[in-house]
Length: 156
Image (cartoon, rainbow, N blue to C red; front, side, top):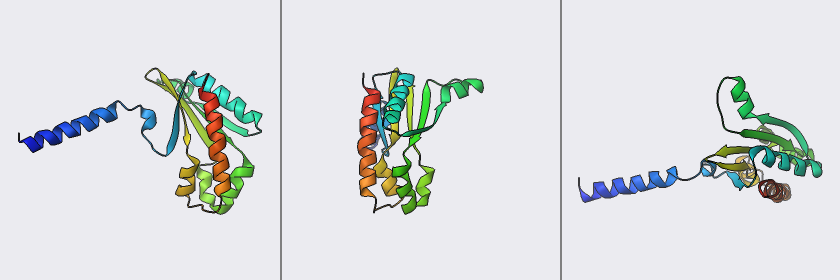
């Protein structure tokens, strides 16, 4: 092989190797992902309590591991929490109804490689995705609140 071929291969292999060691949690730059010091259920329980304590509605909780088990399949602990505040979400849907596919908000906690992660869609991503330019205060409030709630849920 030529020097260039070896260099290309080693560079490519180094890139693949580096990506292999990144946690699955960091695969999508549109998500806010935090490692949790709690178990999956404790992370979601703490998040739910924090949200409810501020009057935010909980619309559902999906235990993907339990559903997989019912289907005869295995999945490490994975729980989705669906929540929202119509006072914040409604103005966004008035600006662009299509954002309703991503609202109410969702947070996913899962276990991978002995660690627990909590993820949610970055509100700034929703702003960009749905081209909503006139609701900056709403997106800022969502970003700040989700940051605080997720920090609380992921720390001991």
